[in-house]
Image (tube, rainbow, N blue to C red; front, side, top):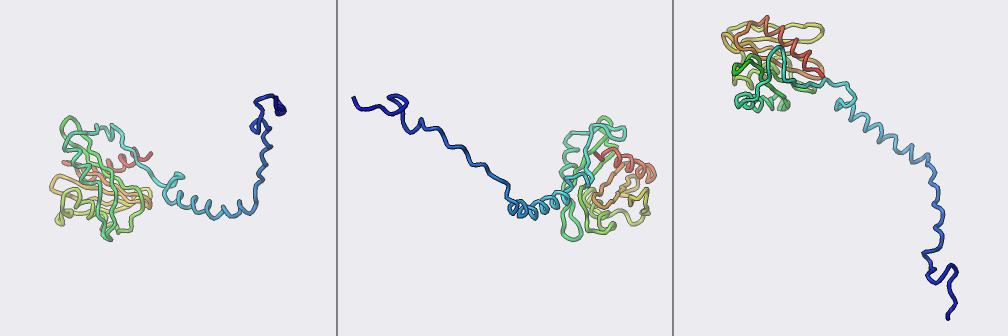
Length: 198
């Protein structure tokens, strides 16, 4: 009988104890080389608002005492305001929603997260166009001002419908209220803005 390998008749190279894995030490040069990449990633995330610096809006089912509508007309409105064309060729991705009681709309809302290069006049006209397909009526006064550091503008889309828009450094938004005055629409706009900010 041939001599057996140490360890028994089935012993072989697979019975050899594995070599201890080499311990990897941290290379200081590698760490230093990653610093520019880390700084770039931090900058990109900060620019995108991922560290909480940018305003974010969330739409609840109840807003300003009204219920969010999900019928065909509300969905059509949401699709119509989804992209607003700016004066410089920029496109603003806008989230819109309609609120009301029963089948009657009492409030249209739209918000855009991010900075806009357009002037306030250009933004206001762009919003009016996407809402109704025309500029605010030139015969009716446009009210502009500042409340608690937030710029606003209001104008009539018709004899009984008012559009109010706010603008901040990193966002803008608007409300449209059929059958309401400028004063009521403006107050509602700031109430809505506060409720939507997450």
